[in-house]
Length: 322
Image 1 (cartoon, rainbow, N blue to C red):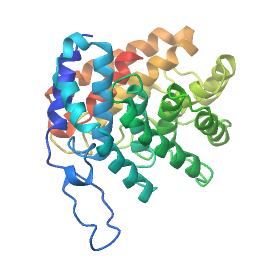
Image 2: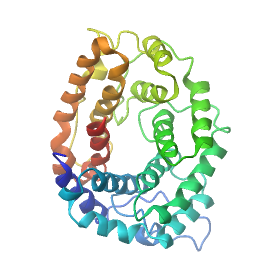
Image 3: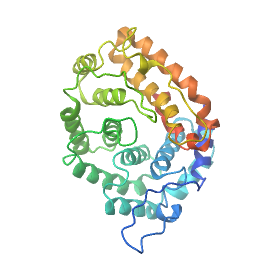
Image 4: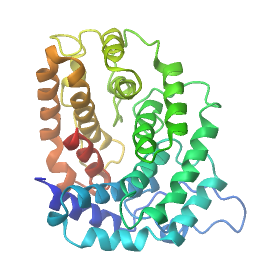
């Protein structure tokens, strides 16, 4: 991998940066007010917030699998300290006590970490976290009346896509089938999505492409192509959904919300690459658009402000491996 060493280095660097940190901790009583990050979240501190810490550790497990000779010993040493049975027990208990915490984005990334670690020395320690999140997902899906369709953390489609991937790898058919069934209920009848109003000012996800990427995992090949043609008619053709193919304006001033747009470029690239095989007549157009978006923000992944570097490697990896 061309960028493995640099991506592993920045991932370790931000995970070992204790502050700033946004805990989003909801105290359950007067004795529950200690928000020192490494005490509150012994596994998922650093990297600014819980979900970023989880998915940057996923990035390290992926890099250790894909390019172990390039990343050195630092990633494994860091994960040895974080992913202990004791630390993961604290994290799992926290989620059980607060069943809405990090739902669904953080759940999805933590499940991806559990799945990525399933064949590593951290598998046994991580397993209880995967079980707790599975229980939370199965309890949540019937209660959520409507999907969230915007382009930030609460986006339902993005999380469901990652949950399918994670729990398929973990052999939890019950979770996979529950997620797929809800996806069909929420999105199966969608047609003629209007992309003129994407992106919003702080998006790091395309609502349209996130939904399409999810349904790619849910519907059989021919059925998915028909669904995609009805949902985003003319995608890849001149003048149709052109905004999805263009590099978004990005900002690396250190504004955490505006920096989301760099992630939008990477998540679009990932999704355009996974969708391209379903539209062979415009596949080259979609892949070229993906390449442009990656190239535009690649320097920010490792060389940007902390408000960019604390999370972008994970999205760069999704795009790189698509």
